[in-house]
Image (cartoon, rainbow, N blue to C red; front, side, top):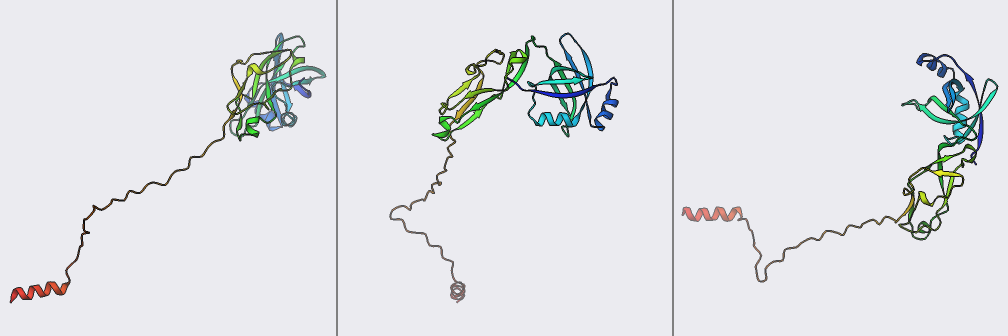
Length: 226
């Protein structure tokens, strides 16, 4: 099942772009938590703690035990807003989850093994889809979905319908391709261009172009004068 991590947050009352900007300058990130039947609440979190969580592999399908003012509840990251230039986190949305509430999550797809078409025929494994959307209870969220690809030959593919996921409903189109083995690319070798040589007609004599010498021209001219 999916791992659970812990995170501390503080409640905040100030709203607007100005207070949020000042908060970021102090190393804090503004956030909000909401959920079905739960009143939304504005929060402030440590930018350092959030950075550690994300670098540690936390995703939108990770259950987070969020502590606010001494009380803890399970949440998931619903949205991460980043600055368009430096990509620093600007705001976080958390969704409060309940034990018996079915939720929709995106879970990573992991391909196990090396396809036969890659090992024996020099092909390339192309993973087309990297996540699958599930409807599942929080306790049944898989950390990832694994799929064995060792038997795939050149030109063969696996689809969403080939996934086996217990205690979850797959919402992604079952006909979508997950991966395929592509044939090795053959480089075309260009043949040297044929040079056409015009053959001379049989019996034809070559044309001789001869420029008269200057002396000959002068001599002819003298005889004419005489």
